[in-house]
Length: 126
Image 1 (cartoon, one colour):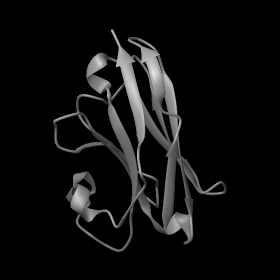
Image 2 (cartoon, one colour; image 1 turned 120 degrees about the vertical axis):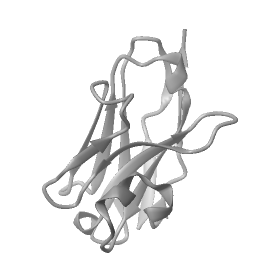
Image 3 (cartoon, one colour; image 1 turned 45 degrees about the horizontal axis):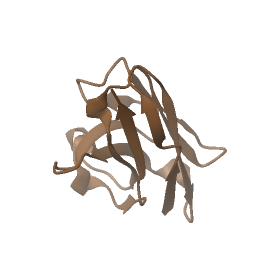
């Protein structure tokens, strides 16, 4: 699966951004999709994920209520709507795809994901 994220940019605190991640190369609906982010000097962290069936959604606890993940299988695209952005949300945001079968708890874990896009930078100014 090839993944390409877009939609990043500069936004003021309190603003919103919508990220998109377009997938190609394999059957998109066969994959759980996730968003991760990495701020300067920090480790990559889980943001949100959405399963291939259901779908079920998962969020980092601190982000639930502000971020919303969704997918459109017809467009082979996963989205991340980010509202009420804060300066601490500044990071490179990556989308990722996970195939196969694995424990549900692993959906929060970067190593579970098989394919990664190159990331899109989100900068939130105070």
